[in-house]
Image (cartoon, rainbow, N blue to C red):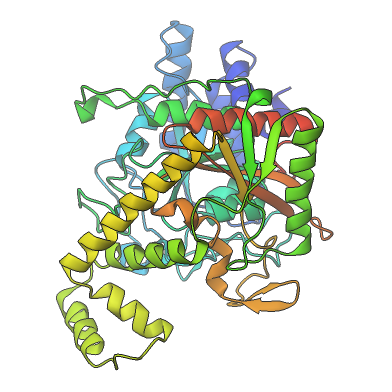
Length: 478
């Protein structure tokens, strides 16, 4: 059984540890061997000795029947944007090539507190600022399904590592779809939890040592089974002792069985068209639910797509300015002052958002709160438990390209995350679920969205969908 364990979901690996069928040291070595043999360039930094020490400690705890947490002895990888004590953290940037933190990011500390064995760091574009995962330090991460296709970004290393069975799960991050897009392109499950459940302190690109982070960045897990996301979510919402927190988040279990959930499908919008194969995957999901007797209906969506995206972009560019140095900030202010009032170019919008006044941001934040209320009323008044949308307009696009074509029609490169960014600034839990393959054999996912703190409801529906569609994550052997 041990030879097959790296292909099993995280919860199955934990069961094998609990039954004594394998030790944590042995399980770790199986994964390290797969990493050694892999060519996808997903795991970029390792400390095998420290990982083996941690695995040995987990084995000793288990032998004494003193397991420390829900993940005790499970090997995991961590996106290289999260600081890890004693293990290099670069966020893909040359300026941080030798950065070895002395303190874990809060999310990493929570995983360690629950017994996770950190075996390495996974690749990300420099400072998490691209929809491809490539950088001058470590190079490009390859999509396990087709090396000529992108893994997306910025959590491309985590998604590829999970898909290639190098790790049972990974900790990624999502600011602008950067966890969900790679999950979709690599055919794994990716959860952006309700914003605020998982702390983001210690996540770079905010400079090392900063306490604050972006008001939209959300750490979240990637895995090959919805149940695994639940295990990691439980760990990630349990404070570590160092936090000295009096609070413990306990998410509500779904109010209904998965087959009794009320599901809406927002399958298309002219602001962000999807290709025929993606539309077909949405239709297949809808049909599978309807055939099983689920209450499912089509909807046009609770908010205006274009208006929501405009607000998202304004808030995104604002939060990205926090760590800008004074000279660069002054240069942007000067460039913004020189803009003509009728300049409606993307560059002009970018500069205006980057240099907006505090008053303008406060008004945008009020608009965000109003939008959040609109979503709340949609789930409460329209009596929908979950909304299903496309995860992205297409399956994985060619690696390195700066263009997106939807059924042959050129679209904005950033339309890749248009559907994901409906919720990025609102903070709603959003889960990417692999449901189909394209004619080229590439994964196609859908996005499940629910009201605040309905994370477990999304996971329940994801597992139900997997049973209806006859598949789980589309991990492959390399």
